[in-house]
Length: 309
Image (cartoon, rainbow, N blue to C red; front, side, top):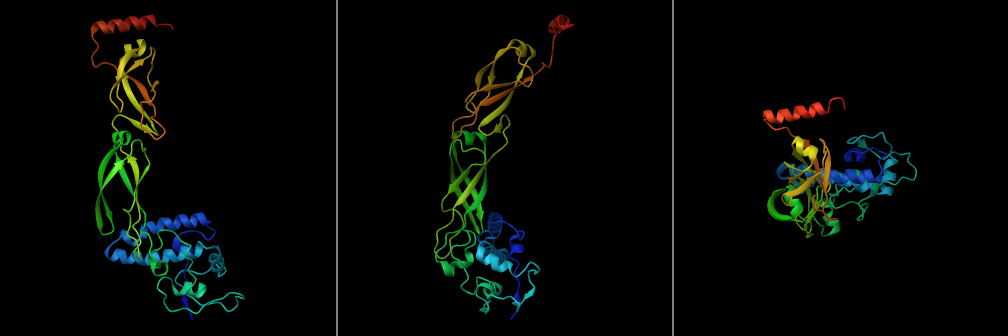
């Protein structure tokens, strides 16, 4: 009996010498993309077929024993080709297929038998087609992007978001912990994909992305801002107002502070779990729009004094 050959490496998009880590990474990426909970209508039907193939490929390639047996068939087969057990493979046991076991292809069952499923293999994204064999299964964990203002990340806040999950549209209230930082994750338990066979819902993980701020640049928990000094302030030093996330503060600028000099205000940066960062203030020299005759005369005297230096 011939069946259609399944190229499991092609299904997962990995090379035949891929490491276990690469196979697992490829599987999780594809499973997130094609999980049926994230699709509807005809796309959902397509996703259900895709996820079965992805599950089957990972079932084989994540199990060293199955992968070794599969690799012994050779690398010259292509997905979809008619496959019939070669007569000259000594010690290689094939099984009579059941003619459509549901979860796995005839090709899989020819190689590993109908009982070839390993309940310990696979990950949380590949269980949709296995509920009949595994009982209740927790739903898929879902990841989403959460854009926040710098002020909300600094102080902590509460916000509401709308999330589309398959055919569902949810409005969720989210508590933003103070100092979570760019790239931090917030877990909302039980707000992910639906479970199977009575299993509980998965979780929702929100990855924080801080919006661009008109005043501050963010570097970890440190901030950077600019201040403008008049020439006499830069030369003689001055006390100037500097913006921070907690309001304006007065900073003493030392004499001879040239353009692009960076001055540090300790502890005036972004709140974080390890404590507040620092604020680095970059000096910019700003000429007045109008310089009167008396001021021009003074600048000429300064220029004369500096001749020959």
